[in-house]
Length: 326
Image (cartoon, rainbow, N blue to C red; front, top):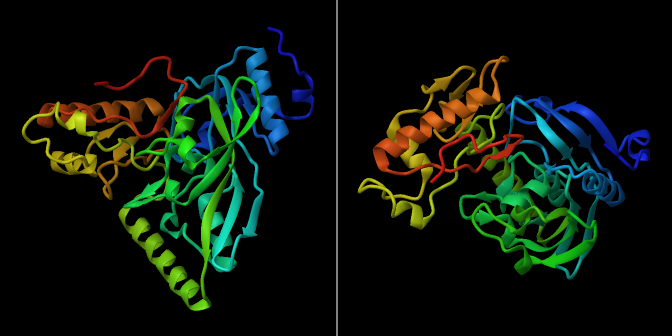
């Protein structure tokens, strides 16, 4: 194999045979054949060029909070951007723009905004994940969508390494969706509109943030999970179910099925806090345990409601889709 770009290894841009189990919240999965953690756009371009030169599959991920890695690992290059710059600009007395690179944690950005008297992103307080992951999935919490505050994003083309700036419409935000799902582009930075408010309003917002985090911690597991494992159902999927398929919300069906806190496969179990959240509660847990548990959940919902739950969690390294499909 002609690896090319040998200085990638000398400069530490590309590493080989790197564990991924410590880079995702489930704490499971094998190694990546190649691994990169770019701290600049140039390093990101070099990583993608390395993948192109060697015909390697590429997977870009953030904090690993929405990721399940195969126990066999990933026979490609896993790119974990660590680009951390944040830049604030005042457009008017009330309107500000913040441009933030893909590796910044969403919760860290919210803290930086509040320190400057800026609001608008606090509904996502306490949610783990990076800006890249948040934009990829159009991060949502109840009625709030991160795409609502989004102005534009700078992306890199997977095959050419070219840089483009796309506006909100070009990102085609939807439920759990954006243009980034086509894997032709990867996010470099995103610009959001936020609002300058009074000190009193900031004090109120800080209190609201604390309450959002308290509610999240009481309702959801805080570690060794990917958050919501299955997405909600689309309208056309509900039409395929039986007469008991009356809501789009997957948690409704999982609650009805009685799996919460009880259904288990090896080191993986359905959380007692939320029926759509799987956790690994043993150190010997494997990704195969999680897959087996998820299939059991799918089979239960299919038998009772005629519906097949589909993933919200991202998969990495699986040669074939390991779950039931519609």
